[in-house]
Image 1 (cartoon, one colour):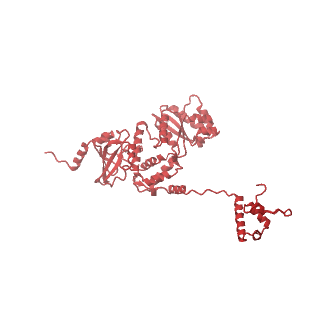
Image 2: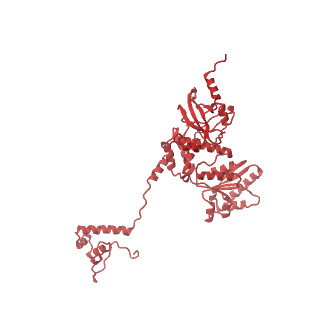
Image 3: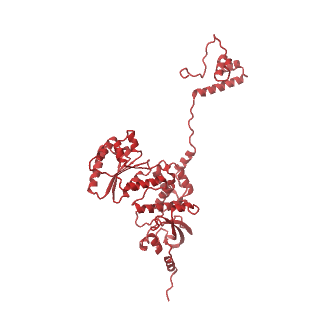
Length: 474
């Protein structure tokens, strides 16, 4: 008579027999069970999957023991059933719906999660059609998983994040530059990710060597000559690697250093791979006489223009999700993403520091928010102050026309005097301490009386008129 299986063994056998991918995670996110269907879906042997850690983040991770794309939302533990989206290696970049079931505590670490993966893959675009069943953070996480899967097929490093047309254009230019462009200029405001694009281009090549950054604002002609000569000597000793120079803020290069770089690039047999960043177009600076035209042409063989973050607002939620998932790596607190109200706050901010400022803000939120979602209360005060200031702009300074202002005051004084005198001009002049003739002239000049009211008297001495323009101003 065959021996009766224990409940645990029976459950494992049943899970192994199903064609649906299934895996179990402990409270630390470590994979403690995976069935055969799941191993096929992930494209790896079962033995290599067990024991690996899942972190809720879609960015590339250099740790060999991590497995991205399988982690549940941080708020899944403690809920009986939670829906999420995961990604495997055999779905062509698409994600799959997954149900996470909380299991009873099986160790001192706490309860574990049973993950049952749906069979049919779906794209993040299709998920976005029905917002009733997909939360904003889940949709953003699915988009990040898709982008990461697409990059793995074509690149060795991550690329420019975003769903805007500008982000897609920049990714296309990165692919073009990585295919063999010797000189690339990356133009954009401070904090927009210029250095990131330069590194993405360089390390997407087949055999990248070192990328040497040079702060151009610190270089004079002598330092430029020494730096270039040292790099060229190092490059000639090992031509198997595709080494390159990164000229940071090349638009701040001094005229003497510009001359030295231009002359160096003209030397016969010298082929330097250059990546340059700038805040302004070198071509436009050259037309204004503020940069060498020949050097601007040499460095601008391929120009990538990065817009300010405020000019591509549709990318802000995805970037925020990316940065918040980065905070999950190596942190005890895990975040699923931002609440809807918090995303609205991020979208309303102007982001003068661009992507770099957004990354700093998300890091600050991760340090103060209890989780699993970042709410408006967790955002820095600077964002709320900026929104309040934008809603209550200062009043524009009004122009004061002195002659007109004084004439209005005089008109009001004269009208009050006439009213107090019952319309009698002689009595009104007495109240004002001026002659009657002078009062009448001012009434005519201000349109308070008809010109016929003035009686010409040849023997009358011309009197000064108050508030009349100076002859030079008339």
